[in-house]
Image 1 (cartoon, rainbow over the protein chains, first blue to last red):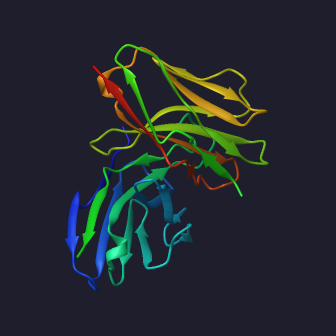
Image 2: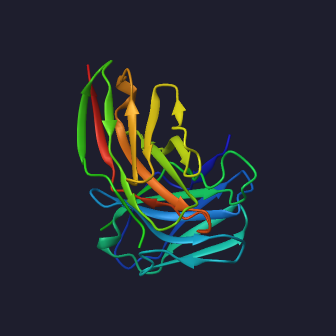
Length: 117
Length: 115
């Protein structure tokens, strides 16, 4: 089974702090994604990566950056946390090649509930 | 722009009954994939069912089935014999073949199964 893990389930930070959210997947997936989830807004894509050291902006990249130094790990960085970044953050990974039944299926981590005070 | 619309923010159903969740999407692509994801209160998002646009047959997974109407761009999820464990947020999602796997999600439907 694919396993996607996130470093924390709950995190409380103060305004202005630098925040790191870590995500690790164990299925050798090329693609990794970071979303934020807010009530009534669904999932919004922040950044994604389709290879090591590659990154692409999603729909709401402002205030965030990412790092992918190893294939299995994708980090989301809040350079200077603000209260409007209080949210649920979900990481996902997927296999982009059309050679198996899980093509384009995204596998999700348990989420990190971040509160910025 | 491609969009996914779930018009029912909340729904409820009695245990053992059947419920249908609606989803419509907008795309000009011919090669695409549709998904229903379930997010129980514990928050782990899991795949319920997927449909490839080139397949005419509606996908089925045990008590879950879809009604895929390609011309109408409609992709509804039917849950039969509803169980308390089906209580969750349900998200409809879309991707097309050349998208690098990016999913576009609807805003979700909160389903409550009542005993």
